[in-house]
Image (cartoon, rainbow, N blue to C red; front, top):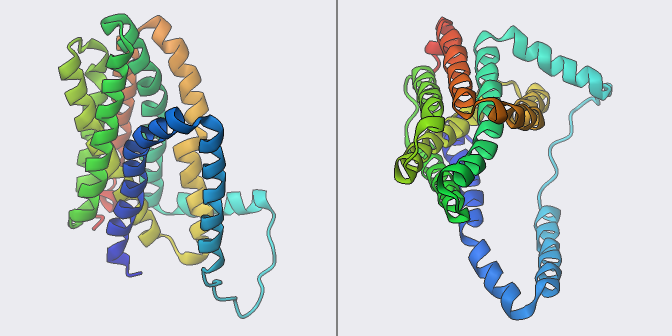
Length: 268
């Protein structure tokens, strides 16, 4: 695959999963109602055989001419961290990814449930807010595959700024429609940024280091989530409004620090 095709490929890959998440629950619920839970899980298990068949047909990657010495897992992780540290643009945007995921995962997941209970008092409100997030994410993923990446560095910094600005007022928006609109706009920006960043990382990193650097990225995306959830649970009891202000302000601060590096601003 050519390097300039990576954003579109990432867009298709991620939006396919998002569409499945949006479309599949309805038919699954109807099937369970008609035939029961056991049959649903049985068919789900059988479906994995088709996945195994598809994987079986994949061609093996080319073998290196000379087998490199195996490195232990800890050494490989350290190699990935050193590689990221040596590249200013890569290091800066990796930090932006880590802070974005940390600031969004806990505050949004727990904060929305708290807002739906305290402000609206109905589970349907939470369902509507989560639908706004899901629909916005799908739009953002599709846009990321359509937009040509000129002056990508400035675009990524601008989108990260939008996400931080949308996070800050979430605790003080008390109308359901207004809150849903802010969440939709924020999730469009977050999904767009996610697709573009992953594609840029894949274009930037040398192939021998790809696995190690992507493992650092996955830790930045997923490894901090339990900590974010735990801190958000404590912060909500102190101040819901303050939690979102701090989360959004942290995103804005890290984005501003990244924007100070010329190599980040001039990414294309």
